[in-house]
Length: 168
Image (cartoon, rainbow, N blue to C red; front, side):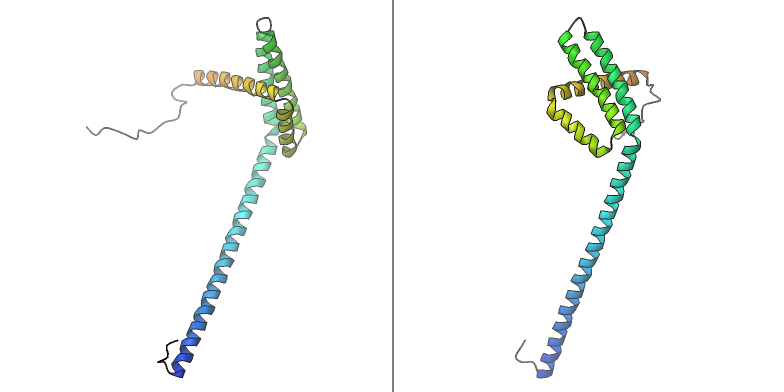
């Protein structure tokens, strides 16, 4: 405080400073409360999103299992085509098809957390088989993609707006 102030002025200045400190403290408390409220809202939204994603994934398990069975059948057919030409690769492909079929069965009978654990266990215990199955699934997906694209007409493709045009 300035020494030129009267005792009354010094008292008033001290009270104003204390009020400013209290107001600042109240504002910090209000800000902390607002931040906590925002964090709680975000947690609630994240929990709702996770719950919704889990429900959606659980409901799509059977459809995914059917698709896995279809892929396993396609991989099995690919393995049959390799027999007589590259028997060693045919055995790997057949084994991958069997694993995919088993995965489809596992998918139907387990929850999501159990499934992720089993996929991880398969990848760790038999990495070559896992990679082979992944490659076979990739080949099947690429083949399916080719068929889908070949059957698509220009009317089926999405319209892309022209971004750059010459104004000349």
